[in-house]
Amino acid sequence: MSNLKIYNTLARDKQTFVPIEAGKVRMYVCGMTIYDYCHIGHARMMMAFDVMYRWLMASGYEVTYARNITDIDDKIIKRAVENGETISQLTTRFTRYMDEDTGALGILPATLVPRATEYVPQMLALIETLESKDLAYQGADGDVNYAVRNFPNYGRLSGKSLDDLRAGERVDVNTGKRDPLDFVLWKASKESEPDEVKWDSKWGKGRPGWHIECSAMCSALLGEHFDIHGGGADLQFPHHENEIAQSEGAFGHQMVNYWVHNGFVRVDNEKMSKSLGNFFTIRDVLKKFDAEVIRFFIMRAHYRSPLNYSDVHLDDARVALTRLYTALDGVTGDGAALDWSEPHAVRFAEAMDDDFNTPVAVAVLFDLVSELNKSKSPALARQLKGLADVIGLLGRTPQQFLQAAVGGADTSGDAEIVAAIAKRIEAKKARNFAESDKIRADLLAAGIVLEDKPDGTTNWRRA
Image 1 (cartoon, helix red, strand yellow):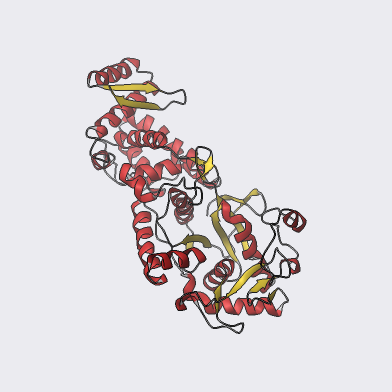
Image 2 (cartoon, rainbow, N blue to C red):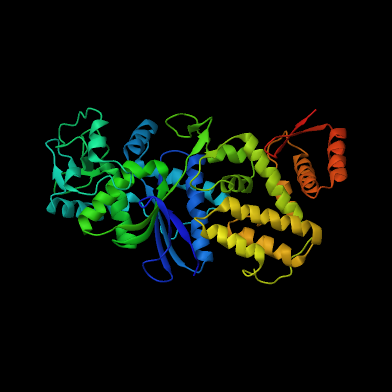
């Protein structure tokens, strides 16, 4: 097994990973609320845990990976009513779109994909358990709420105290709660709501609150205590805090050993989100950029760091990925298995074991490229392909990549330009300035103007 260390949000530190059951990992990740197309922020989250999933398997673990689908929610109901369709029609359609988008990005399917509506009986049983422990009560309005002040450790994950939360609370118009901090476990149905979002319960007809859904699904599929729970940083509070309160309140012991959260995608220094209107759907970005370029762009940043989205950064990712592919052009691997004792592979594994540090792992790939360009060694070509494959890269031939890496009707010839720029970067790194200058001159003669940026990237435009 590996020497893997994972940053645990709960501990606020990197900790050595020790599975509950030797050789096996149980991981749950909060997935999509299905009512619209997935955006790049969603892709970043799913990519982060896809890389973790891949590395855990490459490290020899048997991984059970559950990523849920929330298919009942206020936003879903509202959108279905607006569209004049059923909840099921809406969520089935957008689940298909999500699967198409994630498949294009090379994101592996999770082992288990539970849908919230399939686990309502488990949710009701969990709420009954909480009620029996004086952690849940039915308000005058019919909703069943969680009694936050009856759970001693509330706020431990987010670092928020109850006093801090009370000081910052808004006036709550829901008079059915005993305390404004209490959150809904079961929502009493309204006459105006569609029949398909109502279930019978001891508290009357209604539907589950968002937080109880994940507690029920993960405990049903992975047990009351499992290894890793993940999601976007925006879920740390209140969603994951509430999951801990529900699950640990009901079961009386620790829920999860490692809480893992990925960072935001940012546009102009603001978080990308639907509510801000500054989001880009995966589908729209795929119209402009090759899927592997998008994957590579996301992996060049550490999963916990902010990821700054722009076409310029994606163009740079395309050039950089081309450098990896062109190094393999004309060099065939020796057919042997990936050698994990080889120095580059050792450094790659060390990077991935250090909280899935993909930027350092990618840097190792570029070091391999520099040596491969000099030696044209089949053994190094095999190592480059093999290590890249571990994180879902370099799965095509250089020719296939160059043909696919340009998109749109106005980009004819881009593949050759990008390949030339990649060769120029390698020439500069090798201090072969004569070759570098020749490539620039040849491109200029063809009407392509290069602009070298201070950060080492190169932009280009047609003159």
